[in-house]
Image (cartoon, rainbow, N blue to C red; front, top):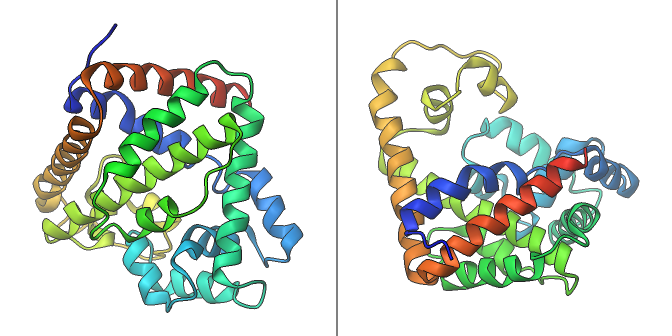
Length: 253
């Protein structure tokens, strides 16, 4: 059986989990659920649903949990869904969308029950201090269906790394826009996707060493979590099961 260190597991799965764990968020299937509920657009449902686990809070609290979006956009989208349903209901609806996405793509895939068990070991081991959005999603009930459960766990693992990443960004002295512009694959186009209409790259090159250290710090913190929550054999097993899940998820558009 393959054995991995925490660092090796982080390198093996974190990028993949980041992609597949968030794939449902603005997928047409999820957007359709938001439209059916009466949300004015899918992005309002995304903001209310993803942040709804934090409760009916001020938009500034949501900004603290999302960070990489323009605060004005966050405020507009968060408040834009207030009339549709309360925040906790939005969170439950978004969780249902997550589960439906996973059920469709992972049902019948061997090992998903085991993936959920291993992911839950990681998730339950974490001290949630400073990890608000992760803590909110960890508190949401998991479904009994193994496919839906495995996928929701992947989403929660994604939120875990996202929150750890924010801690690293703040520690580096960067703001959300700087982190987006100086990050791998970042730039004005990515910034626009996060709500900034006009951006300048002036001075960004000087921030790249700090931004690279953010990635390294994030990896180190995630590695420590994996090291303390799983055995070497379990880390190897989780890496393989994430690979299997990713292939199944990618097989269905």
